[in-house]
Image 1 (spheres, rainbow over the protein chains, first blue to last red):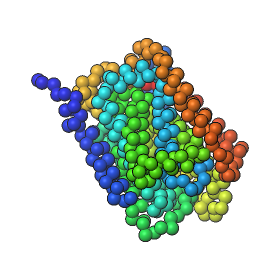
Image 2: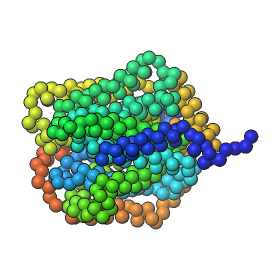
Image 3: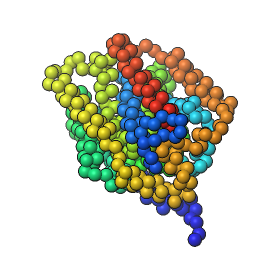
Image 4: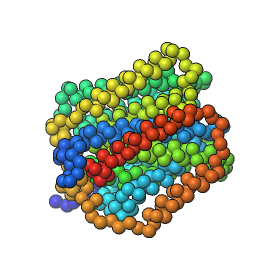
Length: 34
Length: 430
């Protein structure tokens, strides 16, 4: 079986997307509040 | 994780649970004490500049302490072994920076009394992510669940009572909704920041390596947000120049913050975020002790407020005791192991090696890592920055209690010595 690249593993990791989505939402909130 | 009770041969046999609990409590002492230097800053400076000063001090410390303890050779080897985690360390730093800026908005709009309990819910957010993503508390019985969840709620509840009893209320009710949203947002940001922490530690990364990268995300984002909020980089530079006579204090606060944060990282590593974060969130007790005993902030309080402070503190301590007694059982440790295996499979890490690191016995630490000349340069630069800032500092017109200052400084140094020694004896700072 072909091994997936590290970049692919990072980009498809739910552990990445949860904090990234929260970060985007938090930054958007900050920009709205100021 | 493979064995929560035994240490490596020739090392201390302290259980990792007890070690993590000590780290969580030491973190609380240092994170709380980090507030003390910033209290020496007179009014008249933007909170963004004070925050920026703390982060700059933290940046210096986050390079100096790991270099001093482990050396850059070890840190680079550790990062080279798990390069994918650099992404998470930077994101964690960015989450902290945005969360911290949101707290400034929250305090401005609703005051500390309302804002603090709301963002202190970060431990509950962290507990949820720990359960959902890292299998923390999975397989544990109702007894452990009630100790951890009950303890976390008690700490949040105690913090709420303390905040209501001690903080001055906002006189800007029109902006209350914005403040509340900002405080909740900060809680979510801080709670989510613990995802990268836990991921790094079940992948076998050393906390000292993690913070050296974390700080780039932290400083970069704080710099950007401060520049935006102050109206540009030139305004930021002008404000920093104006703040020069007081900059030593937030720098010192940032340094203390890093010591506390390092203990928090070790707590997250050895007992997980569900248990470690609520314990370190008892830092409010120490901030309160500095405020009340050293800075006379409670002198004008009525007996009812004092009773509230006593009640809030007692509830927080009870919560911390409950979590301290919630050892993970065998079935929970099996679930922790599944979470670790996921990382090893996904990122092709050496499972045996990672298991050893997670159990506090890093094989990398056994390899020779000769000290480099630039490590001395890092040390001298850090010391030089602090000396330079201290020399230009003007005396602040604030009354403090010298005996209590000495007592609390000693009370802060003791956990550093005890917990530092325990970490060294059990894990060699692994």
